[in-house]
Structures are given as structure tokens and as C-alpha cells.
Image (cartoon, rainbow, N blue to C red; front, side, top):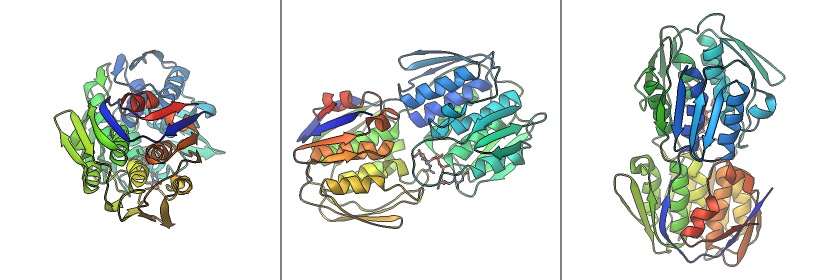
Length: 417
Ligand code: UD1
């Protein structure tokens, strides 16, 4: 367990290259085992979650070469259908190997996944959908034993909510299934489109990615390809909220501004100026920020749950009250307790949190409890008077590449201790 030391930072200035998206890279890596040829995945962020996924690929028999941000996967000799429990529990997206392993091997033996503790994170919709496609599943003591007895069959699946993970698992299972699968109320996140673009370039037939209805026509074989992972919109949101809470002008390089629309809209309400080009976003802040009104987390294109803690951190010193409604997860306010230790004024009632902006925050000793919560504590600590120690830097390493380095380069007082 490491800690991060953050000192008060008046302003941030400069450029930050934004890493590839973790939430794209992980499903794409899980998808590589569906291909008979070699896949080259570029712009892969160098993260502990990516390393854990590489370990799973190797356990299944893939040959994997990782060079900085390029991962090459040769899946021609996949020979196992078992993902060991210690690998499954390291991250949430390990559950995507359910769809890809059954699709490739006709059976799978894996365990319930790990990941950030954000309240209950069931996988019942994943299991129901795959069982509707013909998969036989038994769950005993956290172990999932699955067998297809022949190829999976395409069918129509209506998701109760546009679940990102369930949409991805169904796509992974459907690309090599017999016949056509139609997902209704599918997730529309950019990371879903990235996965579908990757699979399409391997020979998959997928239509409607990015809309609520995705149609997948099963094919017999997928081939190798080369793919560039899209930029990480939540990492971009992290630097945006940090610039807003200090003063300064920061340009994010390699971003897709349209993926950041809902986040930019909220940050603009705080009084910051945002300008974009095709692949950059510049944010300018005077440091005097206003309340942002009501922020409701929703599936894409709504405001992302992953940016809720970051924007809340920003609002702790905004003039006036801001209100948050967390619609995706039941227990995603663990950062609030720590923000209070900095002197923030936040009241949580059920899924609502009211933030009354305070004049100043004061450094303290904090404990990060999840990935985005950890980043939010750092954002708030930049504005706090004095020094703050944030324990639990391993949470950050799951999602941010060179976190302190990028912040240091734009003038933040930050170091790992
Ligand atoms: C979710 C977020 C995603 C974020 C990730 C990590 C949404 C819609 N999804 O993805 O943006 O990057 O967390 O923070 O914002 N659910 C069930 N049964 C299931 C699957 C999901 O009840 O089988 C519920 C979940 O409990 C949750 C909601 O559906 O309340 C959305 O879950 P889902 O999108 O699947 O979660 P993740 O894939 O983890």
C-alpha cells in the first residue's frame, strides 16, 4: 500500500497527453481470444488492471507480448477454459472472459469478479442473456461452470437497463454464435463502439453499435487485426476537474471532445472556459468556481458515474450548493467521508448528495477506497491549504498511467511516498 502526498497548488498550466481508455482496453483484450490470428492493440494504458488481464490471457494459453502501450496477443493456441479465482477477483472486467471463453472453447470455468466496491454489482443479466443463447450455467460457491454443448444460438435480448458489462459480454458471445443476436436497450458508451470496431476489423458482423439496438450476425471465424484504443474520457475528466478547482489553463491532447460532452457541460456551469479542436480540449479556470446545479449520473450519453466523485470534489469550494444524484450504483459516495475530513460540507441522503461550497479546504490524512474516489481526493487536495496524505495509491494504479508525473508536469505539488 502506497500513499500520495499533495501540497496546495495555486495553478496548473501546460499540456497533458491522455492515455488510452481502460474501459476499452480491457474488453478488447478479452476479445482477442476470439481471433485465430495475432492482434496488435495499440494505445493500451500501462495499468495494473491491464497486467491482470494479460495474466488471464496467458493462463488461457495465449502468447502475449507487452511493450509499453502496445500489446500483441497470439491466441492461436488457446488451450484452457479455466480462469483461476485469484485472477478473476483482481478486477471487475474479468467477467468479460465469460463471453469470450465460452465463445472460443465451448465451455468455461471461472469465478465471480472483483473490482471497486460500489455496492452490489450483480451479473444476473449477463447470465440470463447467455443462458437465453443456450449456455448451461451452474453457480456454486462463487464458481461458474458453463458449457455450450455446440455453438451458442443468436436470440433477441432485452436488457432491463443499458448495462455496459452485460452488453459487452453478449457481444463477445454473439460474434461467433449461430445466427443473429439482437440486443435491445444496449449500452451506448464509446467503449462499446470501440470494442465493436475492434471486432468488426477482425471480421465480425456488428450493426448499430452506439445506438440502443445492436445486431450481431455470427460468423465462423475471426482473424487478427491492429487496433488503437480510444482515449480515456474519465482520465480527461480528472485533469479537467483539477484545473477547475485550481486556476490555470490546461490542454488535453489526444481526446475525443464529443465523448466529453456531458462532463464539459457541467464544468462550464462552474464558470470555466472550454474550447476544443478535433482531438484536443483546453480548459481555463479563474479558480473562482460557481455551483454546478444538479448532476445526475446516467448511462451514456448521460453524465458518467465514473466522473461523479471528481466533479463533487471540484464543487466542494464552489460558490453555492450543488446537488448530485447517483443513479447507477447504490454505494458510490465513499469519497464523501474523506472529503469531509478536508472541511467540505456534504450531506448524503440515499442516492442524493448536497454539496455546500466552503471558503477553504484544509489538508488532512485521507484514505482512498476506490479508483475514481482516489482521484477525486487528489483533486480536492490540490485546492486544500497545507498538505494532504492520501493512502491507497494502488487504487489509482488500476486506472491511471503515470498519474503523479502528468500532474507534476503541469505544476501540481504531488509525490508518491
Ligand atoms: C459501470 C458503469 C460504467 C463504469 C463502470 C465502472 C454505467 C451504465 N455503467 O459499468 O460506465 O465505467 O461501472 O465504474 O454507467 N446490473 C444488474 N445486473 C447485471 C448488470 C448490471 O443489476 O447483470 C446493474 C448494476 O448493479 C448497476 C447498473 O446495472 O446498477 C449498471 O451496471 P453496468 O453498466 O453493468 O456496470 P459496469 O459494467 O460495471
